Length: 228
Length: 284
Image (cartoon, rainbow over all chains, first blue to last red; front, side, top):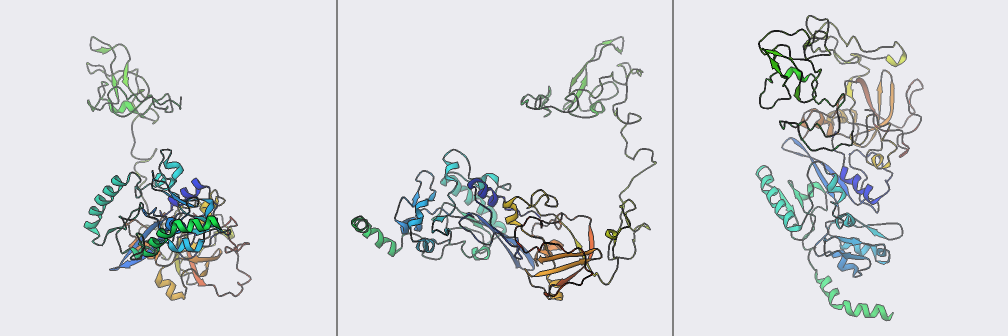
């Protein structure tokens, strides 16, 4: 049966991430969740509509938000920063000093995962590959052309074209949170049918009131920290 | 020679690329290529020709041998001279066949072999309705315990088939030690229909026993609903997996935690639930 998540394995290979000890769980989806050593995971859901079985695949990963709530929440460029050239949102080893729970909860897509020592990790958009002219490992290995990578304008236009095609057959098709993220998913069914966190919950994008406040007091907070 | 990367195509651009790597033998790209010319060495397809005889001609006879294009499969003269006379210093183009001709039927046969249907060695029907020969007469049977099989046996009422998973190569012997692949597909599993699962009271992800006339296959899991897809509702319309012609009549039972009967054979020495111990890939 052809359902090998090659992107998931390519990701582990490029980042040299260890395999997890898994169990067969009555599904082909494994490991069971993202983790400190699993940045990308293909979710597989069986869905029956009108007597027809559909298999929904969702390669879950960081969306590299245009205004990343994790970055705002961390407010520490040594721990979480954005590469302005590529748009990649990068977690460094300094995430260890952050409040991990706070960062995880700030993510509208429930992506960051914590190591035992509190360090956070997630997809880095293969920024090292990209800055050296290579495609991200998952995109490179994808045999079906499902994943595409390039400049935002091109990708947005490609997504729009593809959406128009898919909508002819699947009326419910949509691009998920396309305005807010740099990893745009095209879904043909309701996002929640794929996985709980496909779409950001309403209002969780953009700069929230809380974050705006934080931004305002940031200089003072910094000064306080330096004093302390 | 294999490192050659010449991008030049054959003389008439038919995509042969004779300078790209090398073909066994003698860098000939198309076997029996002289069959693509008529008896006088002129290509049947004048536009996309593979080989073309361009020997010198004198008084209606060919007097020198020269082939254009691919390396000819045997560089003999064409069968005929330009004047239509047959030559006796040449050979028919299918040089590795007894008479030099192509053949539709197997050697030494008036016709055939033709496709045939046999029932599997172990199957749910008593009779082969297409053919008096029940099972494949060439299937090896060694008359040992391992050959035990049960056809139309009420003790084994279900038909199972094996298939390959893309996470592991063949039986998994070579890939089971690859931790990234083990992570994806760590254990043996069985798939059964929701109907059968309901009938046997088996929940998804539960451990089950699979028994055949030859033994019982440890403790396995099942993943229901998907098997419906394997029958006729696979989303992409393809037939179910890479089914092999290995069928087994089997009994599927919920494993209730009690010890297995002492006569049960084939129980794995290692429990499949003991994690990534590297011996429980899928049977291919």
